[in-house]
Image (cartoon, rainbow, N blue to C red):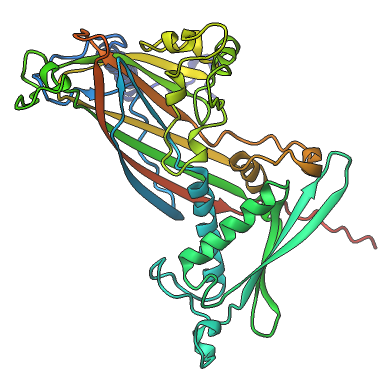
Length: 446
């Protein structure tokens, strides 16, 4: 037998294996170097935050005001689009603002559209056009069963008070030739019903589809816990059409040209607000309360009118109290946002050449349960017993922005500033059922 010292032991590391391991180490080292190089190149390409805007010829678009916002997200569900034109103007300075979202009536109409889509789907019907007839026997005198099985929907509403009591109420929307005869009217009826109950503190808990045998063939329970996602995109195009000195003074025969010596470039600021309108700090609200016909700007917001414009006229009105004109003097030129507004979330200096135009793009996403969203869109009426409704912690649905522009060089004491604005809005809505947890395992004991 061969002694242990003379035994030939197998090689664990062959030359080929060693060469392969060395090549792997070289490849990994090269990969690390390439990654570090790409990071350095990418860091060098970042745009400076306060970089000066490039110079353009008169009348050419200069770009966008402030942040551009993210790209629209593809959401399946109901979609609403609006296009509105405005011609704001003002002496010495011009303020104009709007919301990112459409008016609150349009927002709730969008939610109601999604409910109509769900009802149609459960009833075996399609929406070919929102202004087309609703398939229903009530719309046809013959009563043909092929005209649909949907007779009405019953919506159940719940109000939870602070003392723990719960109140229920039911509203019925019946399909007829005058009510809900089209999907558009159907959605409007649902929106109006939700609004009438929301200001009293009720939210929609469930809805049922009723057929002509007065039987419920579809029940949507716990609708208040469903998750609603709203996505808003707003693009506002603003053009400087401030007239020249001669045209502004009323001289006839003098055309207004952006290439005239007296053509007015503009400068100012753009403000972003966390609510549906600017909210003045306390000391400025006290000034504003002295204005004749005073209406608090926080309440006269974009959610209360059909054009979604901020009520900026109050900023320029002279007060009639002990210190007349103080509020108006504050806004004779665009102020520093943080010094005047308590809900400003961003402000930036902007400028516009004569005849030039800028684009403002803003996006906003709201995600909340139907219960919280209802009270985020409609404020609870404080009259009567509704003041005792338990707080629902509503989300902020309305955010807004505002621009204030003045002449770069003022040629007259009361110079006119004039703008032309076009606003495109796209709103989308999806509703998902709340996640229902699985039942626990059932244990059988023998």
